[in-house]
Image (cartoon, rainbow, N blue to C red; front, side, top):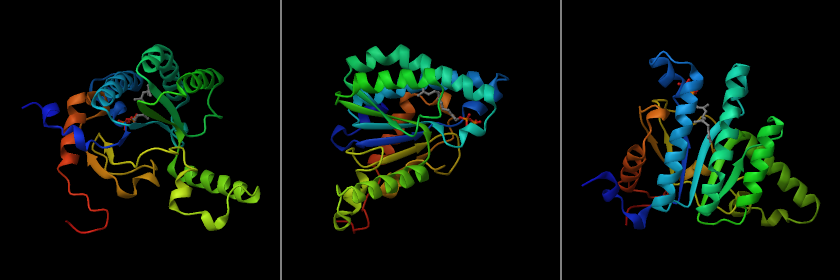
Length: 243
Ligand code: FPP
């Protein structure tokens, strides 16, 4: 039985997050420049989006660039930005055709104009799509997302839009970038690192974690299926007892 056949389509994780990691190491192992690791990694992005879409995953969140990634050499940052522009341009028509909505996690203001322009087009032209949401983490950090939500809540309270008595976990969630989306059921991190690196800190409260030594450029759809099969074999109790 192949891995995909082992997946129970009635118990899919509604929302999967992936910390795409290991591009640099993948390139180094082959004596190639780091940027080639990123371009190979970007090909896996396309494959994993397609595989998730075909399975019927409701939300897929990909960590493409963190608030800390600015510390990398200028040239590497610029290559990553070029890749983003290339892929958005290249894939947008198929994304639109497949009824996928692109949503942004993060503050794109500090990004180069050409990148912002492409993202704006991608956001506005997929706004009404509803088969799957593709969240792209760009200049994203989980802590800054929570601080941002707090500021927005303060503003809404000041403006009389929100009453503090009505602020609870349910209303708080509506101020996050993932507003209106399903809970993050499964968080995947390849490349052997066992940490969360400031990704979706609020959303991961009850996520199942799945780690693998595979480097992101080697992360095929089979690896995704393996993660989902493992997820489906876990016993999620959400703090309760087995029934
Ligand atoms: C981590 O590998 C990867 C990144 C910082 C960038 C992820 C970006 C892509 C996969 C490409 C573009 C994305 C889209 C949405 C088309 P690393 O460089 O930290 O690897 P290392 O830990 O081995 O050095």
